[in-house]
Length: 338
Image 1 (cartoon, rainbow, N blue to C red):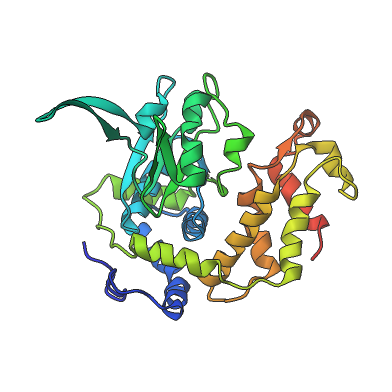
Image 2 (image 1 turned 90 degrees about the vertical axis):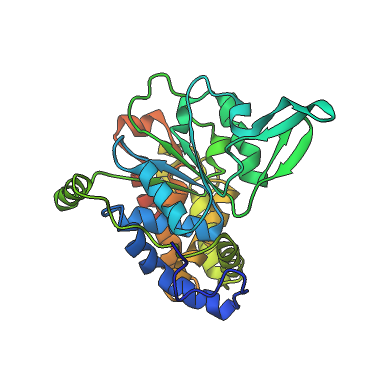
């Protein structure tokens, strides 16, 4: 498969104007290519694209059998990125992720040689990440934050761009290890995959029980994704819009002066500063994907749910009253004004 014909060669640097023009059409083109394999789930693809262009990691939550793994692999293929899948199990060790030194024979005699683990790829699928103990989960922390790993005192940089897309099932929680808040905060977005509509499910059943599907086409290269990320950060944002994002995050923190009463009643722990940063960064990406070069409050509101749902912890009182995190976020957006 070759690159999309309307893309310049990967060796040709793109101007900022070319990048903005490409981003204006990237969303629909990705829908088209991924749609050759994945039916529906447009909001999931949209949010994944925002995370990729922002340089962030994703936590994808959904029941078994909803094509989470296939979706991630298809996006990696469309973006022409090297891909590795890691199946997280209770007996998985940190060295199984980062790599380890092995003893090899050479003409000079035996010596230790570092064997790279699966983390050395552009896109990592951490499948069922909550099924491995915290020690192994923590092996991804340095990789996600610093884009490097340290083994036996030696630091090695990971290939760029680097993304971690982790999946977890909301059911079968016996024998799982919930991610600690510190690691949850490293994920830019928490994307929820739901069941398909009847028509979409019929399409899936028909397509997957027929012949081989149409191959997807490469839309981008890794170098172009890095260029996209640099341009995204240059998108201007008005101070009042940035302040709006900060006020949404701050309003979720119980025990502070001026927070709404329902926050103190229902929330144990609110969103931190990284939430405000990701609200703004995601909003910048979203405006370019919608062919705009300025961020609006609507962009901030559109990013609130995937950015905040894993950063706000509701208490037992909220659970007893049937109040979910999604309901709390909706109420925050109603309460906090631009």
